[in-house]
Length: 82
Image (tube, rainbow, N blue to C red; front, side, top):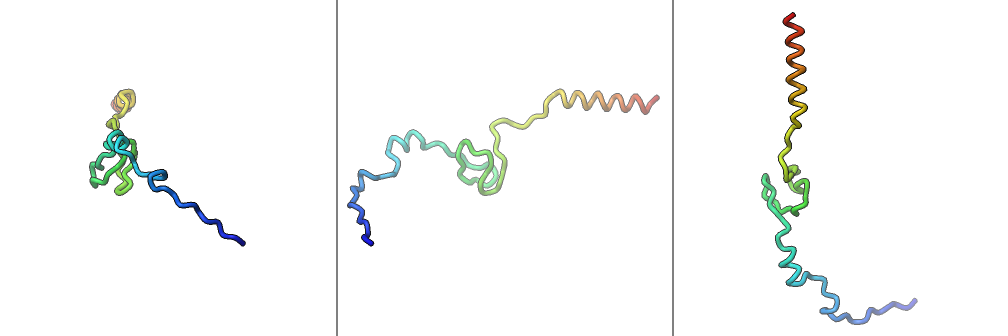
């Protein structure tokens, strides 16, 4: 069986490294993890190193859940007082 021989490649033609324009354009797409300081992509949801959940917005409870809890507690207190 004959062995195929690859033609010599010109290094510049097949260079897969980033160009200077790409480095400038996409250079700031990482941020440090607030817990372990590992470098993460901006769109990461979890840290790959420590597992810390990242979010752009703080997790807040909806107001209606708090209002319903207060109303339920008031109804229980009124029922027990009677």
